[in-house]
Length: 256
Length: 250
Image (cartoon, rainbow over all chains, first blue to last red; front, side):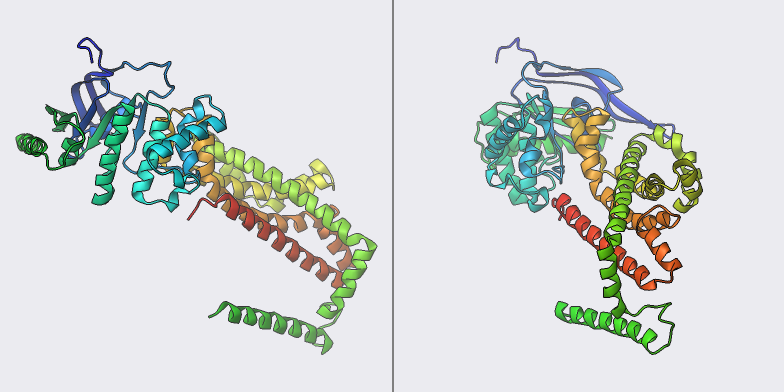
């Protein structure tokens, strides 16, 4: 990566507030964040701190009150520069697995066989080719979430947004998917913005961890994690980083 | 209770019902002209078939039924979708709906005759009105009840216009609710068929009125059973279609 390369996401002075019954609630306040291309960035924070809101702003499900988001994505490459994986997989129950994966491609001007072909490749990437013809209700929670990841990757986004994607899963499934997403990240080279409230998950996955804290949410810490991949869950440097982040979080919460 | 036992009981119940029905006129408990015994029905049915009256009446009624159902359901789904999708449309129509909704379908008979004459289109109109309201409210409610989270999925993947929202999310998600309304309408429309034909539009209802004026009550009963049979056929077919359309559900 050259030093002059521009970040793929450049957020400047982002605030978001809404008004209800004449009361103004600020979710995010003057946030600056630059994400280099190809980084696995994990955003941690307590619930209600605006982590999810940040992702929703990026994918245009929420409008910021002030501030700018600049994306250095190439519109020639894909019609969907960013794709979001929701916390609850949110598969469309009336579509078979393969057609759920192909969903986002339906505005990419591809024929149905082309969409199916691309969806099948994505199913292979997440290791669920066998389930192509199933209905979502026939899947386990972990399978559903992997299908949701395949659906997001199918549109060939430059940035993959993930909103607490593993928090509703049991711990075995969660650890399996954590390894899975690292493998996919290594294989595809995507930029990933991953939101979680689990600090161990954050340090295990991240190239860089940003801590959001306070109300409205601000950046409380910004830590780069160097340990090489594949990582060990009990790697001393990661354990130390987690300890540091926990301390930072509780110090911030105490201040408020 | 085993399914065999309940099926056996159902047969016993039906047999007892028919025996009672057969006994009442035969024992002169009621005048046979007022209540024809079931044993007289096959002959009456055969007469209606051989004269061609049965097939003609059934074909006429079915055409009213299918066209009326199609028109009423089509309009009900279309306007129900609009009312479910757009608040402004719901507000625009709120008082018109409140005004027209309580008027029973049969209250439209005078206008049906004035506008269409004693013609098939009059029967179609009566049937369609009854069907329309059922399907309209079912559709509106089903669209209103669609999970916001799924609409967000569509938005997140760039399907942001109302048409894309309708096709990708609202219509498939609302299908179970719309089908429930349609099934109710299927039964409602049969009632409307007879009612609409009783004022003279040719069909099963008209044939029944004709037979009753001649005190041919056996023929009246033949057509009553014909309607029960046809309704059962449609309902069974519809349930099969519903099961296939909703095969994605648990």
